[in-house]
Picture 1 (cartoon, rainbow, N blue to C red):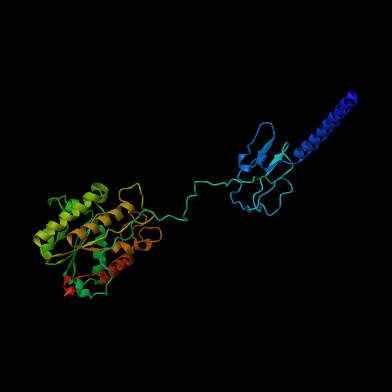
Picture 2: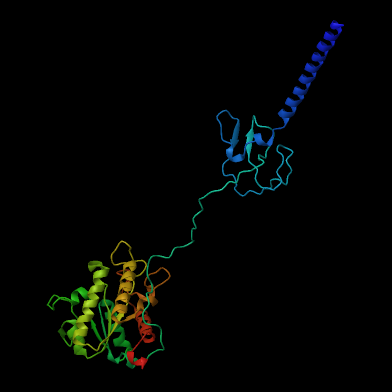
Length: 346
């Protein structure tokens, strides 16, 4: 009896062991053919290896479109789960699949953004600073009481006026190489002070001698390259104060310095259009502080390359700063439509 019971116990154990082995083989076979979603790496975690296990191509798109229902993995993944991202890989030892996801996919992001690049950049040249607004064209008699002070640029305007007689009965006090530095020096045989009625004299004396009260000044071409911008603006103020000291009822109209042609403009030269613009800006601020009038004639002289229009320039192969008759006409036209007199406010 005891032997029979022992026989059945041993037989039962043998059958149990055999059944357990069969179940384990089936489990391993299923696991080999199907990875769980928690064991599949995400694309951004895959790296190149030296043993040829996996290679991921660069420049993977960050535009990911993943549905909310991600429940499985492997080659049977529904096509609606991922519509855009497919990570190209070589799969020597990877399960046979081209799409790699996880149940909680990572989002490829970047804190850096591509800088905005514009198609063109405006040069750092001031082409207009403001001043007197446009007005109805005045009559030529407006300039009967005007005197124009300047260097060789204004000297060309003098020649134009002499031949065309377009600025009423105005007077000119001009000289080549003249500037505010020279104006503040004593008169001498070597100085460049303008001559009036055959006599070289200080500006304050020559302005008083003309008897004019609209004082138009354009100076700076012979100043900013030597004295600098700020010093030249201060020198302009000193010159005007000296004029007002002897003609206290004078109306001061400071004209903006006109530019050089694009071909002759050199940013490494102190006398360049960038510095001319900054000088004009300083003159405008001076006029605003002192109650003088700023006439921005330079604003109508620029071409598309931010230089003096070549048709306005008589020495485009030289200094690139002096005027033709067409340039003088544009200058005069601007003066006629940017005028002012305090009496107009009454």
